[in-house]
View (cartoon, one colour):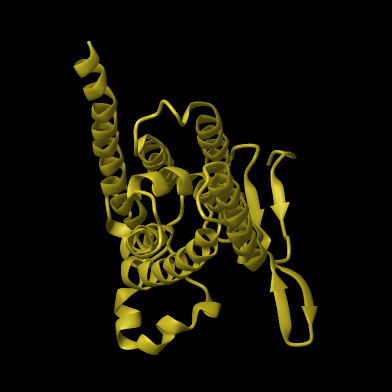
Length: 270
């Protein structure tokens, strides 16, 4: 075994106060909302949008993300169990959140926010919201790392992690990094495009770029990731991949529409 392989035995708990345990995973979730608020606050302020709308945006996004992620896990990955134990759907502290469900929850929550609160278009909001979402996705994968969960198959690569707290004795692909690092790079790319190019980019371009890159990364990483549910064992593509495919296709469709919006004024002026 390579000496570079890492024995990962990090505690998921930061500290305990009596029966209360503060966990890294919860901290990273909280940070994703905090940074999301700060980023959107600065965007709204920069573009002259009433700042009262930011507080309501955070509320809509928090509800949409958590409810969507929880329902996504229950229905996409363990439907047979939760349909027999529906009250356990509410027991979110037991774990079980799915990023694809969170994405659907955000899309729906933002739709209602745009109708009831926002003075901007749906595409305008999504183009900006995907920036903190990419950062949040990175933070949540780091939370998965601290929980020693959602890792990959056995590997002999020098950067394999032995997840001791999950009962592993052989190195596994640290798929939390395989996903998290590209998400962080996507955040930096989207942030740079917003700061430098937003005035010349067509509507929904950042949204389409986000969907294509994020869910392509997710689709590819799933090839080396252990199944999250037993029913996936005999599937050619696992559930995460099947859920990613429509979002990748939608990303290309939206990008085509977006580029068409940019070309049509140019044709009229030529």
